[in-house]
Length: 426
Image (cartoon, rainbow, N blue to C red; front, side, top):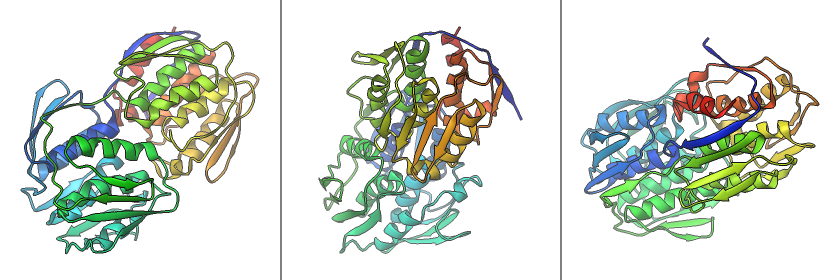
């Protein structure tokens, strides 16, 4: 296994230009493919996850042109994919697998969807149940409730509201919202239980509106797509910098200096931009510009007790930041961590203990009590999870060397993360 050794450091200073948002990039690619007309997408994230989406769209017959750096021209197919029979391998890209499952289930055709072994352990049953209510024909090829899947042509029936659980993954509701306009029928979705990760639904609704579809909603419980809805290409769209990726650099600034991230401002459509608010609660000194956010070193990092439903991915950074806090930090409402690239609650607890933290984990929370002194030379397992690798780079700012196993797993969203991190630290 490849390893990366990070030297002990005490200072982080500089400016980072963020890669494009994964959530926005893959949603935009699919919406552009489903639209009528041609969309130019600029500042698209270049990563494993977006590569899986691009490969899938090409296999489905969508015409794509990489006309400049991180810029793609997508000729939409109006919801009618040219290739009606395809086998798609989507790696561990949930932002590709879930929306494509829904779109293909309602587009008509025969499709086989699979991924890496971990993807076949990530639940998709609630989305499949909802799509079946809409008339989709989807079969499990392995364990019930999990990929791989076989999809055949549907018999759409939207005469009744579609019910979907909201408490497992917001990607299920996102996928359903994005796909239902393909039926051109009026469709109503009713969310059962509490909807988690609401800001990710805000991203979906915002992008659908840019492609011409305005979803009517009743709070977070009911969403209605008007009849005769059709996606229309907006001609040009820019992808924001990734707010989740910003969290590591902003945390570095709060721990050890002054760091500015460019490509993201306070008016971002991404929920994880609110990580900066959590960082301020912990003592970080935050300032905003139209297209940048800066974090200065905290006088003292404070422990917090926080409901993290609104920042599920960036909350992982808070767990590592807790190593530098005065007291015990509790992060709540993070059950979605259990069904991500790995069981992130268990993984985070295991690795934090390696550097001396006292950790308590529950079904949907984690508490972190920092050690009096970080244990040097810890070897951190990353579980093929990009965010585990990026989070634990911050430990080196505590003045201790650390080794990251399988550092290249960051390619999922930020292939050059460690080279960018090393530019800041000393």
